[in-house]
Amino acid sequence: MHSFVGSRRVLLRASLGFLALIGADRQARAQASGATPAQSQLREFLQSIRSARGSFTQRSQRAGGGFENVSGVFAFQRPGRFRWEVRKPYEQLMVGDGEKIHFHDKDLNQVTVRRMSDSLGASPAAILFGSNDLERNFTLKEDGSRDGLDWVDAQPKNRDAGFDRIVIGLRGGLPEAMEVRDAFGRTTLFGFSGFERNPRLDADAFRFVAPRGADIVEQ
Image (cartoon, rainbow, N blue to C red; front, side, top):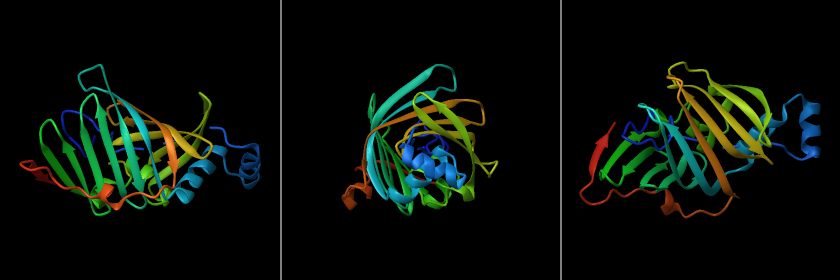
């Protein structure tokens, strides 16, 4: 999720993120109602998926040039509870407990804490982990089909969101890819796999306990 982290490595651009073709049956209903297939899938994802877990990859452009690739696992339970854990090539953890977001950089042994109300809003994380009031913060439009996915362009209504656009690629009602372009023209690419729908998740997964000796920074 970059605006939240503000550290030497990026865990999420503007804090996260998922998502072509759906069944012919569902496409027919979407077309009959005037909704596009991709937007229908995104709305279904927001309305029907209350919890999930899976794996992610992230490819980010560095400010000084080049790219950084990381991978890990995620879990979420709406609204606002999530766990985003980078495992390779280093370890970082972001945990949202519904009220606050805790970001732990293991190498630095530093924990950054922010109020969730200040951190989600019109962000990539809001699409993945927030409530289903997406269109309050974003203007949605169809962005065609490519790579076997249907794409939705989500542009933030708030010009101070820290990024210009999010493009989400979906298949079968689930996000598989997300592209986030920031105000400087840099793009972060996310891929999602192993998506498990509505599992029972342990509440402890969304509780954060700071490691002993960690430097705590409240923002």
